[in-house]
Length: 615
Image (cartoon, rainbow, N blue to C red):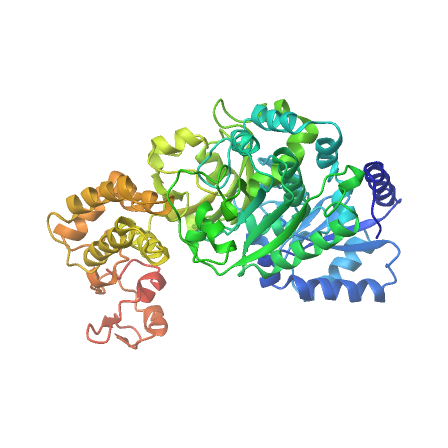
């Protein structure tokens, strides 16, 4: 590689386009995200490579390992281009048939295609699958389409053209105005206007300034940042270059969790390739502007996702929030003016500058522009990463894109905004994805984690789970968060164990309000949300635990007592064979019985009984 000028971007893009237009060329795009790696995509890729060599197809077929495709529930995933044929849940044993039938005979293997859970029909093309059809990818525009370890692939998709425009055609003030016009709000959780943040930092005096990327994603059920970095690292770097030009910064840091080894490796490769092309370092694209990026690996503290704690961590200090003001735009990293944006925010910037702020503002709602990336997880058929226009309803997100609830069970609630977010019940499923609308129903947008819960979820236990996480991740600096969340957790544990007392609910409500008003940082201030939102919508479950010593969802083990109704039991023996504690006595043609002394209340028998004989 050698340093390139701005004009060379078009040359590289055109050369890749010509290569892709080679007649009869087949591209096998194998998902190489962490999720698909975990389900065996590396072995599938190796088997495919071997089969292609043996069948002498190397000139005709090109294998590309992409980043995360997004449809994580279906991995390992292979998309055959240019037809867009989508194969899912592949195994090494499937490869010979796939090569023979499709790559040679041009006939897709039907049994390996996606099967719609509602219509039960096989769907050939990726774009026709509901999970993809309802999306609007901008931050995720390159997912599954490029090799994240090849910079030319990114340039071929108009990569770095936004940076070139910012360097040669726009002044720093014009860059900020375009971002302000776009209406882009920070996608890290708070939703502060990105352009306004840049404007504050731009106006701050000082020769040294910094651009920071927050990739410290620690929410349970969240994998947005990781997937973007694995699939399209250059998009994030391009956003940082544009931000640096806007505020006149010459050094940037990407703060990434050390638990993201694949994302960090691909980021490292992307940085080296960008330096070799002259897209990072001195005199970028011959513009005279200098900017470099380093990766800083965080040790996994959730609180380091808070901007001031993140900056202290980079400085080599303990990651603890500090009071604001002064805000980072005036005194940030090493007390210098700094701009910090999260991964998703920066991944949008290149497109905003290239296409214009008005283009981006044309999507979304009046107060929430553009699109939002969500990680769907929990009790939902289509677990994965999705991007939808702001204003999309939660119902559409969960049922049309997410595919609804597995095993024909009923939807109960959805947790939005991570552990310090809030749960939204069925009655508010038509709430649009909008910062203000989500806040009105007691949740927060957060960074985009969406955890869906079915009818078998105990909301008291769910609140306890999230509060346990928040309490454990508290940095301990301020008393309201350190002691307040601990006390909330203790009360929730007491209620779950059947020791709840009258007055516990009122105590939690009062304590939650104190924590919200007096905690130092966002983690503490939003920490009580799981308690407050579950009390708001599922107060009856708390009352059943406290006053009736009963868990309506049958999940709190201390409140469970099992028995088998002999009039309903069919004597099938399924519970007997499944019980890990040998607590069930059974003989052929006789109803089963449970030995309460041996029973460990694991729910296995309850789940295995198909006849509803176990109570």
